[in-house]
Length: 425
Image (tube, rainbow, N blue to C red; front, side, top):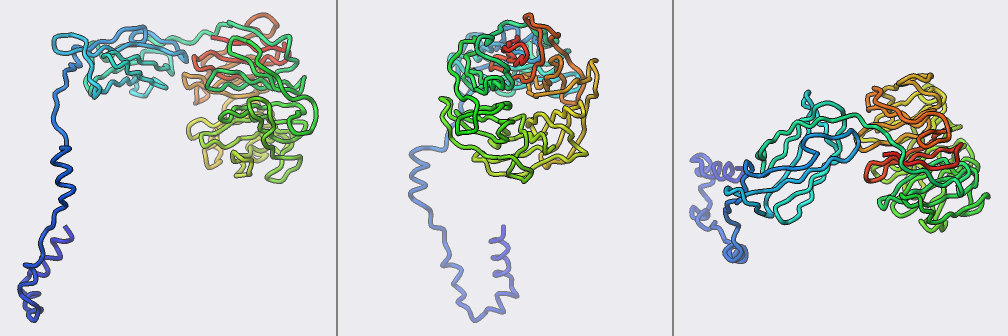
């Protein structure tokens, strides 16, 4: 467009007269020179062609419980079979299969949708329902609804059932728990000043550490997290954070007792944000501090007016969520460290806390808060469910501190005063 405007100016009568001393044939010397290499490539390779898909969305079908029922926070599954106009199973690698879940208000109610192409005309779909009630699940092939879609899925509330208890012979006071992609469970043991690794069936893999202040030793190891293949541990007694290999080898540490930005004073909770930075709850300094992966201080959030006794902080989407034990509440900050809102107050009723400890997100997108009982809330602070009562039997707790979620949605909980780990499904 700019070139045309320029040529228009050149070719106007007035402009032509003003430049009468120029060679009147100079414009004839401009001509297009094509790229023979490009033209030859297009000729040989071709741009592409139109192809008719054999697949017919209206003939395609879905089977499995996931098209009719689901449980909040547990994996739902279905299988889509693509078919041609003769209703025969067919496969086209250009077919696009999608699933979208909406509630009655039109809001998204399906999380972590995964679609596995089996390369034979069948597609295994997994998703997690986020809320109870009726969910409209739209299953489409190439943008068109398959037969029966959208499906009405009845989503039931989650019931938590204890399935495994382990560690009593090894653990003394298990504090933090963390899970990696292989579903290995790392446990910080404040009583033994060690870190223990278990398989998700409770089999003990190894232990490392011991009381002390040297590299690889611990003094009250509390918060724990996996960082790639390494393990990061917050030590309350040594006022530092250590990073170790999965074999227990010392890699680095940062912190040291004090109130300067790079220092810590009884660090308690620990988590990793979406950028790989390390979020540390600096309990006695009443701050949340964020460090880079190599331990460099980046920034902090919290003042005495916004947090009183922070215990743990996690990032979820654009929020930083803090459990404030001193205020018996959970507080939300944005990624610019601006306080947004809080929920909870002291008490034993639904929606109330008695010393909220560590936080985690389960697969349904709900926030889990460990306190006297394990309680589950949605992100707005509305009470959803709780599980566990005081005691030492299966499914009972004596000071649950931390929870983590396995890939299949099962929940791992540290039961500190019962000296064990419990798993719920």
